[in-house]
Length: 230
Image 1: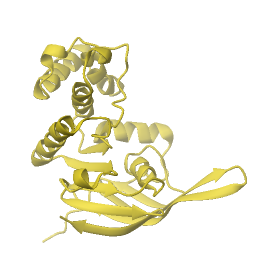
Image 2 (image 1 turned 60 degrees about the horizontal axis):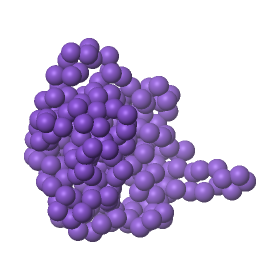
Image 3 (image 1 turned 90 degrees about the horizontal axis):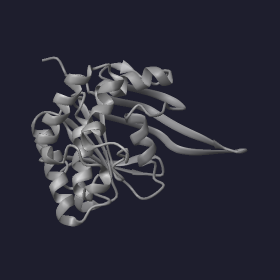
Image 4 (image 1 turned 45 degrees about the vertical axis):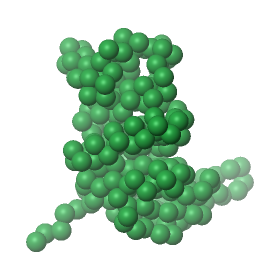
């Protein structure tokens, strides 16, 4: 039986930032495979390199050394425009601070990723309404973020992350700005998306949140120090 290729694979990835005259290593040779349909958590203390690792996996940055494969394609040497195209199609993002545009309605926020993929306006709006319905916010479609609670804003962000039907959802501290009950609701939503076949990669510093994933990757000092299934 042929082994299925991982949807994301990192091979000896190093990232060094130049700060004036000093080289600051953020990743020190990370190798990691993520299978299609997995739900994994990347956890580690502040300064461990987990955010840098998230940026690599999310095609937001390229490594100083090593290779990163997304669905079999090496993205390590891609141009910024090439990275933007591939992440627009393959990856949806959910951030701690929601990252919604304050001057736009919930509906308009959800349509933004589709605009970059040249989806026509009617289809964008129809799809965005369906996604807001899915996260229970169709009745808030024309409200701006300032008129929504934190939990509602995060649900809009989840709808936005799904707008181009990506293979991978990257969630960076998705419960960090929410109370416990609302955070649990958001985790339930991510768990449902996982059951529907999405690959979920979540970064958190909260061990209780981390335990809700199927695999936990612990990173310290820019290196993977443990990688185990729950």
